[in-house]
Amino acid sequence: MMKSIRILLVLLLISQFSFSQSIVNLINRADLFFDTMDKGNFEEAHGFFDESVKGQITSDELKLFWLRLENSLGNYESVNGARNSARGEYFEVILTCGFTKGSQTFTFVFNKSEKLLGFFVTPVAAEAEYSAPAYSDTTLFSEKEIIIKFEGGQMAGLFTAPKKLSNFPVVVMVHGSGPSDMDETVGPNKPFKDIAAGLAANGIGSIRYVKRSMVYPRSFTKAFTVKDEVIDDALSAISLAATLPGVNPSQIYLLGHSLGGMIAPRIATMAPTLNGIILAAAPARKLSDLIAKQNAFVYKASGDTTAAGKQQFIKSSNEIDKSRLLKLGDLAPDSIILGAPASYWVDLNNYDQLGTAKRIKNRIFILQGAYDFQVSVQDFNIWRTTLAANKNASFKLYPNLNHLLSVQKEKGTGVQYRTPANVSPDLINDISIWIKGK
Image (cartoon, rainbow, N blue to C red; front, side, top):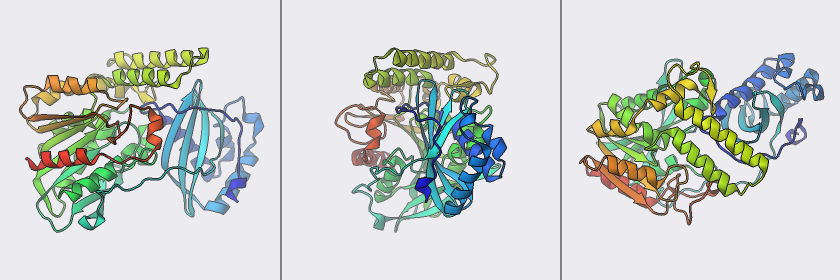
């Protein structure tokens, strides 16, 4: 039985604390560790462990674990989902791994040197589940699988089309930071799935797809930029949109959420077929500035007054400062800061989303929730002030929406994301009205 298969070298209490992009390297390590055992290289797999714990497990015990695992679940295939958390010097990665006979979730504990301290089968916990919103009427739309291709691979996606309509607008959705599935799933929340259903009910099609860093994490082990992570695939999706049945090729829009919204003006400069862009919870400041604010907010909200907690806050703040000031040539392109290479931070630091948005001719709709602790009303006000003279720009502030665009009673932390809540129908209706205003 799977529940009896458990290797636990170090048991740590690690609270939830997310870093943009930080999970990618550790996903790679955990995936490579399992891939190494899948190939029967158990001595090599044993080398993944830190010296401090190597004596607590042998390569033969790893082999026995893997044989039992294959007996139960079949051959190892892929990583289907991931999340992470951290405290002090240790990082926890929780991977849902796909096997030929099913899937299983595992927890891996790493130190800052990316050495494995322990791993174990994660018990299945009773978690809240996604619930479709009232506006998701499946009789009004159909969904067809699509493929977003790039050199060396492809990602699955969905084309959601309103039924009994032709020549309809279509919206391409672009994710926020980090690996993500096509629904932009966060706990029991699925913002992109909600938006697709809500738009379809209003006669508007959409495209959503799995983010490349979720499907091909090993492609992001060295130097890369936001072009590799986000832009290339968004451009492919925009090109594909014009070829899909029923779509009006002159009515293609892009909805960027969070980082996707920040990058949306840059994408618009490279996609002449776009009629407009929607910036939902989009940073107007540098990403490093936002991470610094998030770091301070989460630290204060945690109530951690210990010396260790303060030291960790100071250490993470120093790392954020490094990313903020980074310029071309300061470090080797593949040097890692906050889980992303220097090349990534230099690319973002050189990008001026405000200036780019001012210059483009596309229609722009900027949406923001006041209960968003990740991207704030301050960002919304910067956008509104900067684009005040642009007649192509519209703005809407929602007093009770959070970063996932759902209605809340107060500004929360990441803990709020564990409770299911759907994207606001008012926001979806406003987007629909704006699109139909052409």
